[in-house]
Length: 194
Image: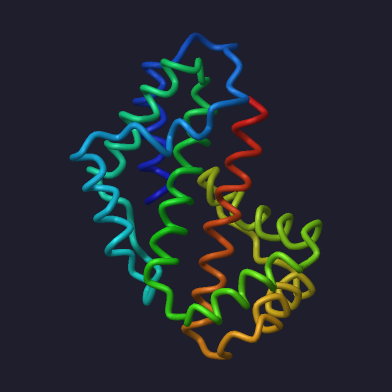
């Protein structure tokens, strides 16, 4: 559902884009600013009501409309291609998901610091490719393959080695936070390659 909404946004925003062949490798930060007061309220509503229990917060039509309008303005200003627009929207959506997760974290401040420290200390050359391989198909509207047993063990090790509480709520939260960060990383890479 999210993938279809984002694809619709990218198609709508592509109407504002500079002709094919334009280079988009910069100005991804354009999506993080420039919203009007009504759009800011919609974004705040999404972040403020993010459901960390079910982790199924779907962006509303109003939110996708705000992102579409902003993507169109950024595309017009910076000459983004349709694929760049799509990845910019994914990046911003991932950033808003991360903001919502952090705002409603079931972890204490100390546990959040421990989790972020464990993520930063993990083998970055192993961690992010695993997560990006999981998120890539999702972003392309395809069915993701399950990670290998070794990759699942590694992800579990990163999360549990952080010292956060070993319970379903904390580990699901950590996994969702990693997924939101992986969406941003992968979208930024794809954006830069346009």
